[in-house]
Length: 346
Image 1 (cartoon, rainbow, N blue to C red):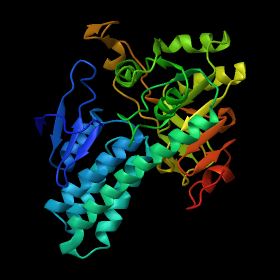
Image 2 (cartoon, rainbow, N blue to C red):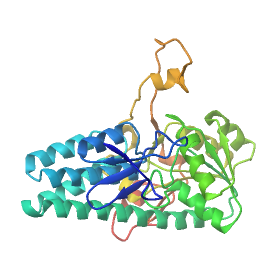
Image 3 (cartoon, rainbow, N blue to C red):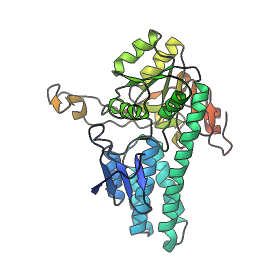
Image 4 (cartoon, one colour):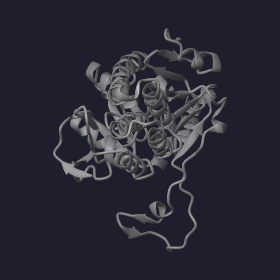
């Protein structure tokens, strides 16, 4: 793995052979781009959150597998590389979806053509996610027209997705239409809202305020939020949504206050193979992320901790699921799985 200079304004840059990505563990203090050479580099970058966000880890994994196939296109090393990448993180479905697409395309091709086919499939996945972002931004902004105070959670901009993002892309589109303020929660693990969403909002010139996660429900109750919009890492067939831990609490507060709770994400995040959110594997991260802050020990070093990276919000609390193929409002098994058809569903 090598360090390099920025080559793009998005989080990922592909030159046809190698992948560069903006190391998100160093933001906002440092903007450092790293070059990935193979599937092992890529899996490690995904696991340590150097690249993150459900769509972007799918894109990165697709390129990681393409690089592996360029080196060793035979069946056994191809499948081993796919398994390594697929296991890098457990919750976001986009990772396995992208790896499976590249693997299937390559295995269906003659051995001599597999590298070219894998590259083309990975590039198609990337282009598809970019296009999805643009469509989500427009549809979400139409849905939330008139909302001026938008609360969001975690990071769902270009650092997390293709194009300009999912939920944050909606906020960017709203800001281009009228004056808004984005209330961004800090968001564990690794304070991705404070570090990454604020970084993106500052660069976009959008008025914003940073909230501790525990303050959101009280501000919603006091009428200081017009709508909540978040991204998603996996959507079950019935519309249950896995997203960064703390999302469920925002959904409960929004329902109690009678304001919209909207989820935005590409259809690549829908997992029709699982009936409900109860089947979604929830990643548990290391205890030291809770015991420390800024390098300082906050509690005795042997304190038992729980550090789930995600929680599940039941579909009944979701006002609408906004995708590039349409809007499921409300999300039900019929409306969500209908979005997976080529024509989509509304």
